[in-house]
Image 1 (cartoon, rainbow, N blue to C red):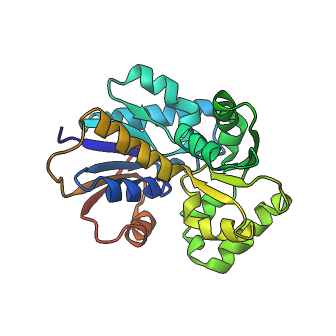
Image 2: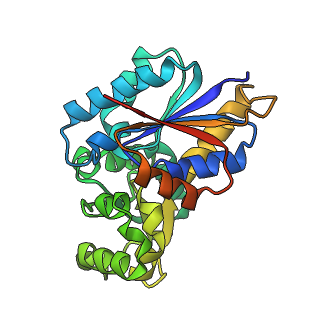
Length: 264
């Protein structure tokens, strides 16, 4: 089935999923949509995020994708059930894979979820984890400063990343949890600063990495993997894409791609 994988995010965060997809599935083509113009999603209402996500899903579906990956925790929390009803292709979100991995990792049944304001207020992780194991204690913590840090490119400055992370997470310094979920696909780009803040003492779960594993397993199980390598990946950016492309080339090198600005 030589069709592409569709991936959407509010910005560069979903590239953390794309990098792992390309590593695990080298024959697959990615068609990616970044909603830069309306980023960040974390401070938007669930109604707005659902509308944005459905609009992007329809755009990507028109490109004959075989599966849609919501590489955005806020979009997953707001729109996953509705999209699964409306689309005739599989839709995979990032919350379930990250939750399942964290439950497997924790030894003391205590997990912190770092996320956007929208994801934290939706309690999507808390509900998902409770559905699997009610004995696990979950602290959902909003970090609204992290996405702007990444999208602006300031995260390249290690001192600046450390400063922002230390300020935002200060109240969690002595938290008893042994596992931390990066509940936004932007956060792996500042993973080192987060891990350092916790003195390297906690397991870090990357929800984007776990989602790539889920997509790989799904396509393999359903015999949907490409049999031939599709060389050129496609990127559509709602708005200006210069800074996005800089992050793309730093995060995923030596990739053949086309990039185009669209207006939504």
